[in-house]
Length: 214
Ligand code: AMP
Image (spheres, rainbow, N blue to C red):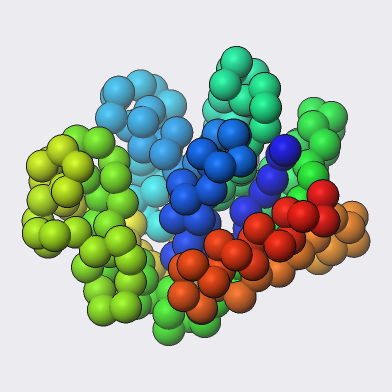
């Protein structure tokens, strides 16, 4: 099963992917995680990507497309995957089409700007194991201690691009460059929408319903 999770930053794509991969027997591919991995390793590509990411801008298409193609070739993707955060531009979607990979379903998560800001500003990641938490009211998963990872005890940090001034740029970039993908995929069919302002369990059930159509 090959899926695309589409939606603005903070729509919950990563959270829902992580919650579903095990039961679906597929892997989550987050281009954001791949890029952050490259930054941590200090590769040339990572250094280049960091400039864009810190400013809240999208990383150039050629870099992201290259990273994604390499990742998809790996053995663990054989059963399928959820693309979380890719494609984010029409050229990226076209590159995916051209690669001949057939996507079974594109799910777009709808959410209000207010909720996006609320979710992103409360997001914290473990500096050691990358587990994701959210310390803002009504958001999940809440860590037991706001500064420490429940799993490994690593320090919880805020991503530079989750800071308020950068969130604004990310949202503008989303509206200009990523939102057109909704029409792109609507035209192709195999498109569904899920209301991402609901409780997480309800959202996961809605996703499962959509997947029954495949
Ligand atoms: P995410 O973890 O998905 O929120 O991504 C974090 C940041 O990584 C984004 O704000 C972009 O700067 C960059 N990024 C991730 N995926 C892509 C993509 N498909 N195209 C361009 N930039 C990306």
